[in-house]
Amino acid sequence: MNLNTITQSSADDFLKALPSEFAHALISDIPYGIGMDDWDVLHANTNSALLGTSPAQQRAGAVFKKRGKPLNGWSNADRNIPQEYYKWCRSWGDDALRILKPGASVIIFAGRRLSHRCICAFEDIGFTLKDTLGWVRPRAPYRAQRMSAVFDRRKNRALSEKWRGWRLGNLCPVFEPILWFVKPYAIGTTIVDNVIKHGIGGFNEHGLLRYFSNTNNLFEVNFAPDEKKIHPTQKPLVLMQALIELTTAPNQIVIDPFCGSGTTALAAQNTGRNFMVSDNCSEFVALARERIGSDLFKLASGKILP
Ligand SMILES: C[S@@+](CC[C@H](N)C(=O)[O-])C[C@H]1O[C@@H](n2cnc3c(N)ncnc32)[C@H](O)[C@@H]1O
Image 1: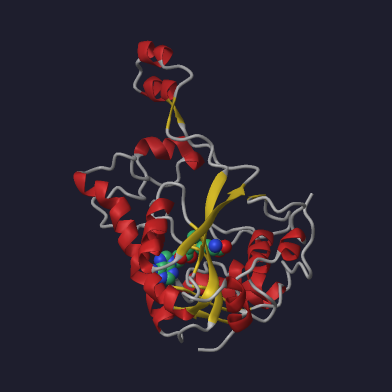
Image 2: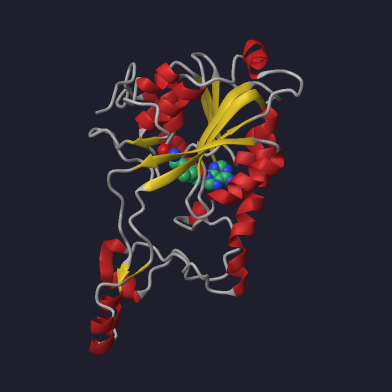
């Protein structure tokens, strides 16, 4: 496999085909396992209504595009979703450890509800959790249903009045956890020995300050005004560039086995790093290849955000 390529492959096949201890970072926005789309359903689906639309949801229009599972699940089998997510993370995580150089970073976007399972899986594989960072979005869809509206639809005025001001669901999700793991360096050596031997282990403060005005571990950043939305869970290019500059040096190699529209690859290209990325969906791979070929989103040398 060549550097700077976008492959169509499942994550585990892609990683298995790569050599050992050759990459400097794995930076990926992995499926969150919360059933936001077909590719995000990582458990045995025990209800055919998942990702469908109920008549009430159709009437509600754009707010409810797809039917998610209630937190309680639809059956007892659904209570195993967190454990199944743990196993899914382990199914490709062993090869992630193998292909990275000692001291290399793994930066993973994982959802608020199941990221703890990813942390346990990666610790059990042999990674060390270094920090949990956060992406703060200025805006996010607030989908919590009004209880009064639910009772209005049931034509129950008494309950609608009683529960006015209450909602079902979650608060507005403006925060997304970003897990920062490292592959341990050899016992009996120091991190500085590791930097000398493998060129990896520290973090690039000056690289980060090209994008943000401080070194806080919460990154408040939005999409650039002209940044085209190609993927339903796309991440801002500037955020991916900042994370790549934070953890790697120019010409080093960044891996992303769940690349979607190729944001990590484009960010690597823009910051002078090499990349090898893949996605198992042919449509996303085609979009990512097209995107890498265009200069549309190029931020030549990064910029400090307000
Ligand atoms: C959260 S999205 C990544 C979006 C990306 N951050 C972007 O900016 O476009 C995760 C991607 O993983 C892909 N995917 C899901 N399961 C996969 C698997 N087992 N192997 C490879 N790719 C997979 C999906 O097709 C989806 O595009």
